Image 1 (cartoon, rainbow, N blue to C red):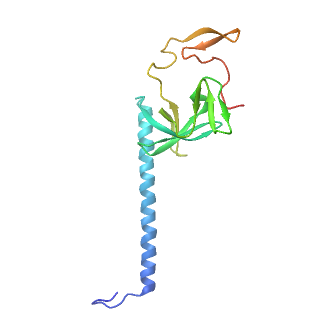
Image 2 (image 1 turned 45 degrees about the horizontal axis):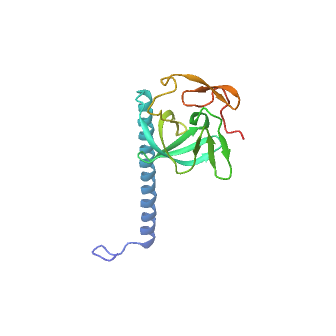
Image 3 (image 1 turned 90 degrees about the vertical axis):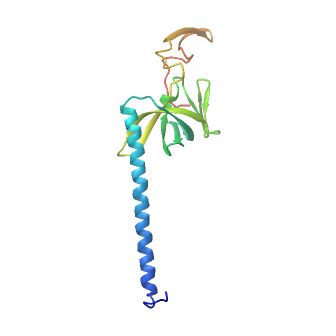
Length: 171
């Protein structure tokens, strides 16, 4: 750099540039970490206040044990465990990478409403559950009814799902 003070050493300029870049990266990382902490605290506050706030979510990955969802509005992700998706037995489809059962299919890109179930600050994890339908929970919709299916009587809940069968992603 030519000017009134003369030239600066090229080695010093390179070292200063590297130092500034490293400091900027540290500042960016700290900002992202703080944003993440604020998001988890917000979700924890919703959980503690039992507000029942639901969020729009998009399934980003399906696995045998549940679906991973992203909340675009908060730019945060978490998981909905397979046991929370349905009372029916769910089957993992390797070919399509979907979960199927209870007359529903969960696949990547599908939208659903979720509520916060658990926030783990230490591990930076959030667990979600599907938001209750407009009719409310099963208990609020009137409990269980008996229907005949395939020549035998089977207990069904108000949503028409079998009761008492194991949940999971076994084939």
